[in-house]
Length: 213
Image (tube, rainbow, N blue to C red; front, side, top):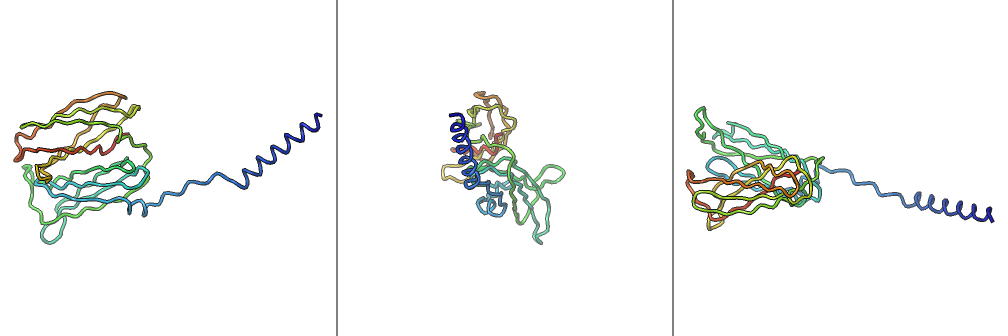
C-alpha cells in the first residue's frame, strides 16, 4: 500500500512539473519608450504670464514625464528655457505644467515671439493615487475656495495640483499651482486662491491632480 501511495505522489509531482515546463508564467512586456510617448498627447495655451501645457496619458501605466519649454525671440533664438518633471503621471489620467514667461530683473514679463515645447517619457517607479484625491471648489468675486480629501487609503508623500480658471465661454483665463499636504489617508486640506488683483473674474474652474504618490 505504501508503494502505491508513493507512486501516486510521484506521478502527481511529475504532472505539476510538466505543466510548469509547458505553461510557463508569461513574462511581463518590456517598457517601450517610443510607444508610451505616442500615447501621450499635449495641448498648449498661451497666457499673459506664460504657457499652460496639458498632458493626457493614454497608457495604462504611470509615467515619468520630463518637459521643456523654450521662449524665443524674432530670430527664433532662445530667451529662456524651463524644464519641469512629473515623476508619476498616472495611467489614463491628465496633468498640467505651467511654464512662466521670461522676466527681467524687475519681474516684468519680457516680450517673446514664439515658444516651443517638448517632452520625453520613462517608466515611473511610483504608483499613482491622483484619481483618489477628491477636490471640491467654490468661486466668488475675489477668490476660489477649495477642499481636498485624500481618499486613497494610503499615506502619501507628494501631491501637486494645477487649477485652471475659465470664463463663461470656456476660454482659459489663468491658472495657479499648489502642493497639497493632505498626506494621511482620509485627511483634509482647505485652501483658497485669490484673483482680486487679476484682470479677470472666473466663472468656472478645472482642477488637475498632476501627481499624488
